[in-house]
Image (cartoon, rainbow, N blue to C red; front, side, top):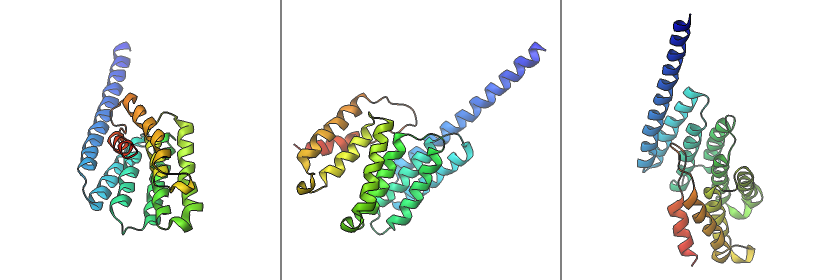
Length: 208
């Protein structure tokens, strides 16, 4: 009986390792695709690839995070894309990931999606999407007060807000400094997001 039990345990362990290895390889392949993306079509292809991994795995939140990030990046490079339609797709991906693990990384994505919607017409949309973007940051900081991407995004919001409304580079400078400091001590984990350090450094320099 013992050899049989041992064989079953070994088989389960080998199967689990094989599935984990397959997941890691798929994610590394898709991350390379995202890193090489130059166009909106490239980003959409990467998003679709990540979503397929997430749908296949069912218990991993990172594929949905990266899919949502790829999608939201479309909004930054394609000025003609329908920001409301894009945001709906981004938020749907976030919701799928949050159902597995509701964390601060998704809050950063939701902030960017809402910001893109607000920028379509800031005067008319601030009360809705501007507030939504701010609420996403607030939630993210409640979930993880040491997430550097949240402070980078908060700094961008303050930097781009006119001084008469409480923004400007002087107000943004300490926020970017905090982001830079947090990036320096952020733990690097395989497949996890680490983006933004160079962007925070660049923005801090602009505030000097």
